[in-house]
Image 1 (cartoon, rainbow, N blue to C red):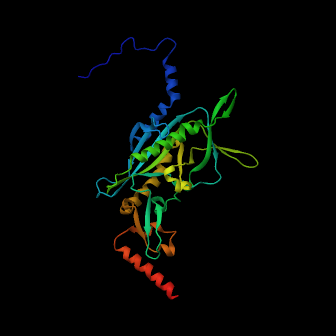
Image 2 (image 1 turned 180 degrees about the vertical axis):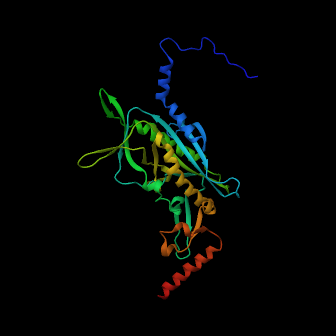
Image 3 (image 1 turned 135 degrees about the vertical axis):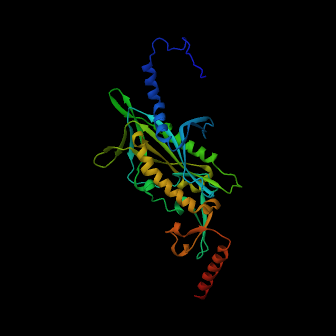
Length: 342
């Protein structure tokens, strides 16, 4: 028999408060938007609400609204060494006043977006049969996905953005508040997620998390294109914010430490995921499963790199085997001998 809970008479709103005031406070806080986004994703994604992480600066525990995960491989098939998964780290914001994005003239490369968490190494070592050199590439480079529509063609980029604030009858643009409330926590949460998913050094199988930080906005999103003659304004439902990060342990690669977050209007979220993010994630997952040994071992072999090294990576990529080492060595020695003869 179910137990009926009776509310005590003392549990009531005090004088001066009514239900409408509570509902308005809830609306402004952003929690209803978090619920809406949860409902949009819950039919496919496993979701953790109020996912906690440790702030790398303050060392305090903070929370992000949603962490969503979708497996991109068949569990019934033979166990692959790489298990691709899509993870969304989501912060929700509601605003009656607009977010204003200053549109970049050029679309910037973002080597650390999306972040690939869970692999043994960030880069893959490549050797070949016609050159003594070795190369180090990210998985996105090896799979030739940097030119994918999701990464390069479709999104609008903005290096700076602000948020409207009322000043009397006018609206002025705020300063660092949007960065502190959106970009900063999302990038910190993503970095913490990467740390959590680091595999043990003895791992043979790996989860590869395609990790995308997203700010979902319920409010006006305005794009401003600055021209020499006049500024142009357009409403934009999706914008990518690249952000260079100074990371001491990666200081030798400081120029490539560029992350990003995607800012998406709540009513564009379905289209963003279904027609833009998932096609990219599925393309990556297919290649990750095809080349699971290369990703798991963080090393591979591509023939003809000396002759034709900077295109057609993926079609020539194979796992590095012991048999290929003498082939590579003999080839290199042959090239040296031919040069001496010449």
